[in-house]
Length: 235
Ligand code: BTN
Image (cartoon, rainbow, N blue to C red; front, side):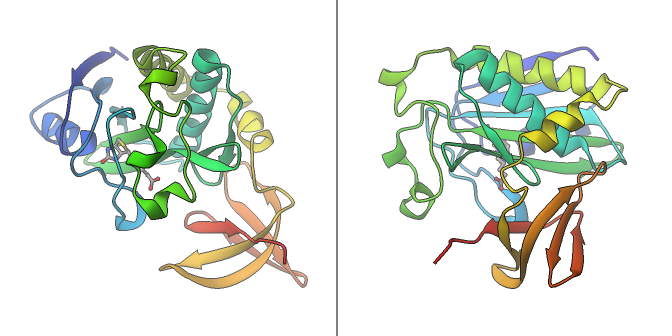
């Protein structure tokens, strides 16, 4: 895959910009990077706060039917954060990256004809106070503000893109072991969330080779291939 990285100061959403480029003939491997977004989008129709200090990027990739592309992307981001910042992160199924118990990166995949626009937002040197109040409770940043930056945001972009391109091309399943062993959820009590409501609970027993989450409650197993869970606070 030929990698072509285009960098902007600010865009509406790197996913939106890249979709337009794809419709105008951009090839797989095209990457749009922005240092802030005015209309950042998250999963499940949510907004994604995108102040200055974050790294926001989207990469055009061939459509992957296997459902594992976003899980591969989580592994790529985890590897890149370790390489560039020395910080060890965890993966919260399906594809959120956590640092010290809080979310530091979100991933949004949107299909477009025979392509996927894979969007990644990392709180890199985001001032925590620049995040909306409700987000501050659950999110963190690698460095709190540019004055505390100990590595270069463009190094992170390059490392994410390289790791992602390698994983998309790789034919073996080595990454899967890394995905499973990085999981924040194995063995944890979780709530199953649908439309912002708790619709079930249970203990996470397994992440299988299709990256589906297995949750057990009183001998009954629920298998989730997509969706959302939250860790249950112990009372
Ligand atoms: C989530 O956590 O719900 C997913 C967040 C995905 C955010 C990234 S930032 C780059 C790309 N552009 C967007 O508008 N969204 C994705």
